[in-house]
Image (cartoon, rainbow, N blue to C red; front, side, top):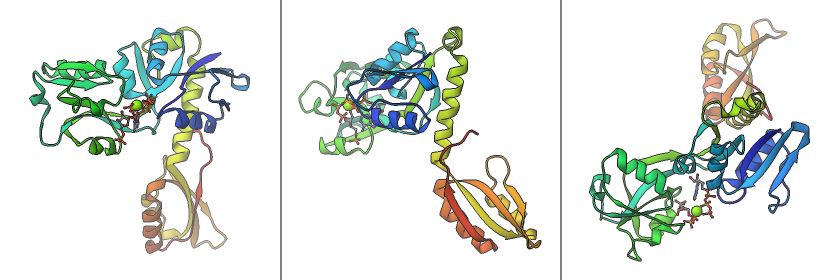
Length: 286
Ligand SMILES: Nc1ncnc2c1ncn2[C@@H]1O[C@H](COP(=O)(O)OP(=O)(O)OP(=O)(O)O)[C@@H](O)[C@H]1O
Ligand SMILES: O=P(O)(O)OC[C@H]1O[C@H](OP(=O)(O)OP(=O)(O)O)[C@H](O)[C@@H]1O
Ligand SMILES: [Mg+2]
């Protein structure tokens, strides 16, 4: 049975369970449940703190897990990213009181507060910056005002928390993060006979990602324009072109990135396409 770690609380939890449900796995109904077996899919879910998930997976106690890329790197364990999952996007950045800093080089000799000390120490070491790292559990934005640090390194999503604390970001982003599927580095996954099950999980999650990012577009176009139209809707491999009763026209079906739906419909219409229909994809295997 495949053993999967799923975030039990925080920013990753709801979206992770929603994605697994969409991929056809049973998810818990009560947020106090710690373990849940999905016998139909021969898979067991363990609901754990997102920060701990990399530790369990790195040690091989659990086969795979969902966590943040930043949490994975911060844990400094033998686990690797298998698939980015497209939610819980954030950037890990330096921030300080407005006007105090303009680049990371200015952090030499300063005190830096963070909840991601592993990640931060590695970043500073790689760039030869000597700064004192102060590890805090949360509410890191308050540390400067309270006198325990000169600047911070923290997760920024909208930037509202920083603004409210009178701080601003500076320097290059340290890391762009999102939720990721992870497993133990090297042979760990395959060694205990779970390689095939992990492959199925990845394919199912990829199916959810594609279903969320693409729509299906159908339209009719005059035969002589089909090449031009197909270049607007190339699909993932190649669009399906079917004959119509009127032999001067053909029907085309193709997958289109959801974000570009309206631009492509406008361009197809201008080209002469008609009966342009868009439908959503509920599930797929690419
Ligand atoms: N606004 C956000 N705040 C915190 N983490 C975020 C945010 N947006 C995305 N994330 C991502 O979520 C993960 C952190 O989740 P975690 O549950 O540990 O933190 P949290 O939501 O701040 O919960 P907690 O209440 O324990 O502080 C990281 O991968 C982080 O990049
Ligand atoms: O850029 P924003 O959209 O404002 O989001 C980022 C903030 O949200 C998180 O804090 P959280 O609410 O989890 O509190 P914590 O610091 O105690 O973890 C994170 O640590 C930042 O402080
Ligand atoms: Mg937090």
